[in-house]
Image (tube, rainbow, N blue to C red):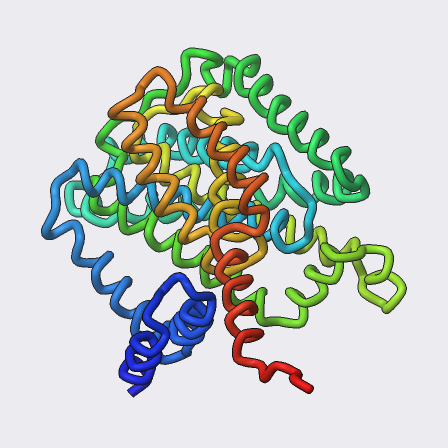
Length: 361
């Protein structure tokens, strides 16, 4: 019925460029029933993908869900509170190295187990590594957040950039633990297959999106948005800004830690450059800004567009794809500062204004 009414009104307006059209499209997409059906359909489709596609497509989707999860974690701290982090990749690197070390230590245990235990031990090692990656990132984020979140604006951003560089230097210089610049190769015997890594990354992307959705609708989320708009005013009305910022920072560190473990399981190798690359943090920022900062579905939309765009550029312009990605950042910042969802929201408001009766004397 809703679709029929929408189509009838579109025919009367005779154009989809009219803001009125987009206002009703947004209302339809925001309907709870539509979102439930869309979520169920997406989950079922994602679960069925490994059974009906090639390894190339499965790898692309794994990377898509990886960037979705990372973007949601960045969105949680930077989009919700306004504290822009240039060093969120540090938690990804910490998780990746944690997972690599645990998986390497688990290999001798596998060789000493009875054949019957080899069925369940890899699954336990897989889950244990992901949990450890998330926990270690959380433990690092606790004192780090208590120190850096007392800074504001560009000072916090620069401090986080320094944190990421410190992580890279530690991974490079602590040769006894991390093998330095040579990196840590992993034995395929302790690694899951591509389908298992895909399911794990999809789960983390879904958890990240669900976490942001829950916070977005909670009192905690409202307090974070208040901090983003005016932290001084938030303190005056009784919001515990330090506690809320640290809690959001901790939650945002858990997801990259877990994602880093699944990433190293997928690539079977980790080194300081790939673990702490600032390009990964740039991609998180671009995805969130393109889709809509501080929104639930913005990182999902941004991840789909950016990953598809990156795949095309990598194939067509392998030497210049990063420069073109930087150009996209400039375009988004200047012409869509609120992202795609912000632009649609503006159209929706314009459409609502068109429906208001004009004051004619």
